[in-house]
Amino acid sequence: MRRHIFISQRAFPTLLALSLATVLASGVSSVSAQSSSEAPSAAAQQAASVNAAKDYVKSAQDNFKNRQYREAIGLYNQALLRYPSYEDAYYGRAMAKVELGDRVGAIGDLNEVLRLNPSQAMAIGQRGNLYYQLGDKQSAAKDWANALQLDPTLTSLKVNSAYANMEAGNLDSALMDLNEVLRQQPTNVAALINRAHVKQQLGDRPGAMADLSQAIQLKPESPEAYLNRGLIAQQAGNSEDAIQDLTLALKYKPDYVEALYNRSIVYTTQSRFDRAVADLSQVIQLQPTKADAYYQRGTLYAISRNRAAAIEDFEQVLKLRPEDAATFKAVADLRADNGDLSGALEDYNRALRFNPNLADAYGSRGKVRVKLGDLSGAVDDYTRVISLDTRNTQAFYQRAQARQTMGDGMGAIADYSETLRLDPRHAEALYGRATLMAQSGQSMAAKSDFKLASQLYLKQGKAEGYRTTLNWLKRL
Image 1: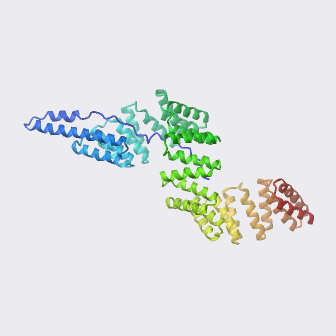
Image 2: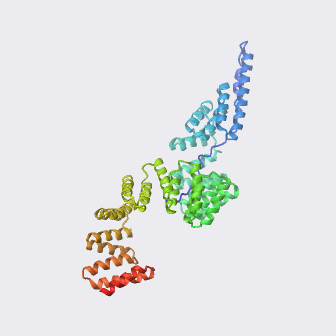
């Protein structure tokens, strides 16, 4: 199963609201300064255009509030046709484009705002947010710094800067920035949530929980705070608390993909697979390109022996991530379980081509090679596992078995001995080593191993192994 994901409160996508400024006076006054005989008529025409533009912007704002972003953009376009220097129309259109995922277009509109008003701190800060989301962190940091210099009250940009430091691993700098914000604004919920994440990464779990609980007290409907507190509870092994907080996050944000996805992980650890699948199916409905959700659901289908559904999900992962080694390995496992050994071998080969360090794939391919009679190839695979994980007990044991079948008694004894060094209670390794000792005439050593193996088989409830070791002891 893949890793549990701790999702931090990402302050930077939270776009700042800009209250519309009265930027029309300058345009009107310039009209009144005209001196030609046509000036009054021209002034009247421009005033009419300006008023029409204002009406379009007001309607666009209403559409924006109703999440009708394309309609809002159309109205902003009409406003700008009538008044091309309308700063608020460019800004509003930028925000609508952001909602539609057009970050590049939004940056273009914010550039127009700044052409008209170079000191518009909000626009500079928003442009920094968008640069960050596009991966241009250097430009983002520059914009945030400039915006804060123009308007130090824009503390949300300080939170964004702290988040950037946090993602870059500069936790001390992030903590310093967030402490500064909270000194100025003790009730800044976004800063509390981000500081909680920093504290969690620094190992201060109680401090993180305290910040998140304070954020929830200040804003009980904050889904991000519940999400993060739930994930900390899960990491602490408090699954029920985690479920409760993740469910509350979904109460306030029903389409919260991160909360659904992480709740599915918690359900999985509780073996509540039906609920986990339900959450993952909802994640996929909301975000059809989330490969991890298909992978997790495919894994759960595989556990429940729904092979067709599992392969369908894994194939979807491979459409989204064609070089995903773990998924090729998962498909190979299903093929192997179904008896398609040659198909499994091909998929294990693909997995290892994309990730030559995937130890589990070598181990699984080794088992398939044993079944196909390729013992030498299996030994090579188990040797690769051991080179990647020198404490892999099963790899030593499986290599011992392969070597024993090949007739390499000394090599097998060495591997059985290493297995027992790592796990002294490995009854099968004791039994395997004992048979080789007996066959080579080392009766005393063989008896000792058989006796220990019989005791372990008895304690472990393995009746067949217990009977077999007793039969050996009678023969020696």
